[in-house]
Each structure stands twice: as C-alpha cells, then as structure tokens.
Image (cartoon, rainbow, N blue to C red):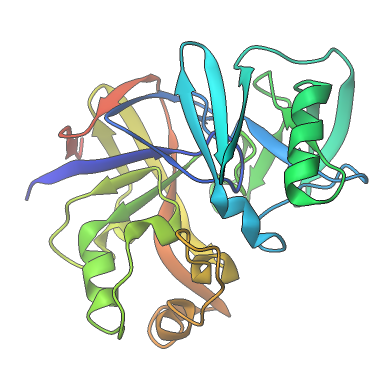
Length: 263
C-alpha cells in the first residue's frame, strides 16, 4: 500500500493561521519555525483560539528571513532571529517554559489588533520546554505546540468524516503538520515506527480534540461541527480523537510526494 505525503503545514505562531509548504525540515522540536512563537497575556499565560477565535484571522508568511503577519488590511513583520534578552517564564498547559519577547513594536501591534495587552514571545533553545509523555514514558523536547511536535492525519479519515457531515470541511480545521494519502479511515492511529524521506518517526498517541476544531478558519466563527459528529464515533475515555501525534527520531527534509515507509 502506498502512503504518500500530500500536504505539509507549519504554524509559526501558535494558534495563528497556517503556512502551506512543499518541503519542511524536521527537527526534534517539530518542523523548523513551527510554533516557535506564541502570544502571552499580561499574566504571561499563553493565548489560543480557544478563547480568542480572532487569532485564526492572522496570516503569517515567511520570506527572506522575516515573518510577515497580515490581519485584514494591515501587516507587520519582524526578523526570524530577533528577540530581546530578558527571559520570561510561562507555561503551555502544565509544562514550564522559558521564552523571550520578540520586540516591543511587535507586541504593541498585536495588542492593538486584538484590543488587549499581549506580547509575542519566542522559544529559542531545545530544552527550554520539556513535555513528559506518559504514553511513551519519556520526556520530550518540544516547541510551543500543545503537547507533541507533529500531528499526522490520513486522507481517508477526513473523507469518512465528511460523509457524515451536512457541510464538508477541509483538513485545515484540524491543523495537521503532515497529511498523507491513506486507504482506510484512521489507520494512522496504528502506525508505530515509520520513515518519510530520511526522517524516522514514532507514533506517540492519537490526538484528543477540543472545541478549536469547530472554529471555521476562514471566518473565525464557532460552529457545532465537526466535534458533534466526531463524538458519535471517535470517543474514548471522554476524549474525541482525530489524527495522531508523532515525534521525529532523526532530522532531515521531507517533501510533498515522499512515501511513508515502515522499517
């Protein structure tokens, strides 16, 4: 059976819109430049679409060493490698992290766009955020993603869901990093060790989903689907699952069109 990478995505700033790419460098913490930045409030607590759906309407672009953010009719940009020197202690869920503010101007721009005081911060070093995986019984170096470095989804999982929905949705609702062509719904849940290009991956666990998947990324409006329908057939231990969390065991470039191999 041929499993082929059909789509690749990175999300430079946690909870903002995606960037579609044809190739991406896999690193231990996740794809290069994937969720290395996030917004924090006045209490240094992380900000997501769960509370602020408007974040879905901020569109990043990476070009010539800069990240440009578009929000309706205004844009702002900053250098990928710029940051202030003062460390800030924050958290992603229960994980303690050390981050630094990008610059005051960028924080001011986001504050003005969102209507409340916030800062854009960056995680710089591997090890500045560690996540303990009870499933794998190990501690991982991860980025600012919710828990694991990568999310993989098979095409048939979405097709199967769309057959049950009145209005079809796109894979963007689930914010994957890697989408592959599959033959059976949710077979990616059962992958264990596999390789894409020169990069070796390990499956960690199926991904539990929250209300964020009901946020339409095109409009920022909160709907009832697809979580309502998913809960009828993908619930276990009070969690609704879609896609699977994975981690990389090596580094390297992966591309759209690469085959997934089991070794």
